[in-house]
View 1 (spheres, one colour):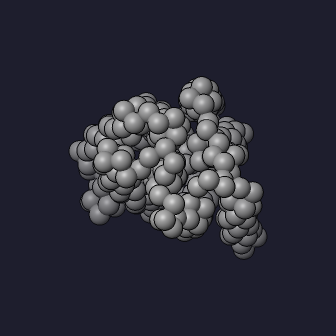
View 2 (view 1 turned 135 degrees about the vertical axis):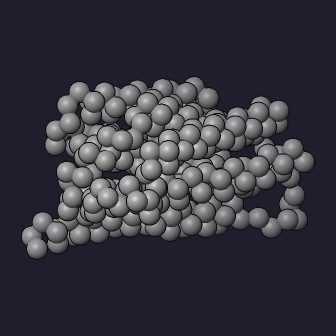
View 3 (view 1 turned 30 degrees about the vertical axis):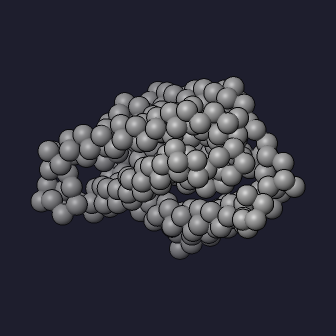
Length: 199
Length: 94
């Protein structure tokens, strides 16, 4: 590999710069949430009680475990344990899928109760509820979108490890994929208490 | 790659951090279910802050990485905190 030019630190730096834009994107949304919560404390409090804390807690733990498995995959690839690396990446993708399935049922239950953006029932509840659920659907939806992209990214990583394009001395791409996955976890760490616990 | 050393984090470290993260999650759920006061809100956000520090330092390897990454992440977080602070000042003293 000595004839191939590679800049691992530059690659990681680029990934972090991208992560910063993501942090600022969600940061803006968190500020929006904070301001509307300040303007409509009562409505936010009542509306958040509609959310399912057990499902939210389970999903938080699922995402934390998936973060740990992808972090471990980097240890595994450094130890030249290809099979274990593949297993750990695959587990992360499966856990992500379980997270999305839970999300599907969670959103589905809201829809059944007539709570979705633009529904007549939600409109009848007033501004505060419209804002709370608007932010809830938008922010958890944008987060779920990141999960889907993350699954695709990790799918590529799985393939690259399988065909030995990523190996014990060339795994920066896997680390970058892992960084993206931890970002998704990081965002959820704040989404969960803000929407489910403390409104 | 030859000139740079890579830190290999042990599985045990990751497992311990994972256990800590889950305990913190359950703690924040418990605190807010028992009593929803202003302090419960502060506690839940504080716990979220501790959890994200764990994720950033260990899972995202900032603890073992070059100093420049820690500095950059620190600056971005400070920027976000300042913007949130200024926005809230605007709303509180309008």
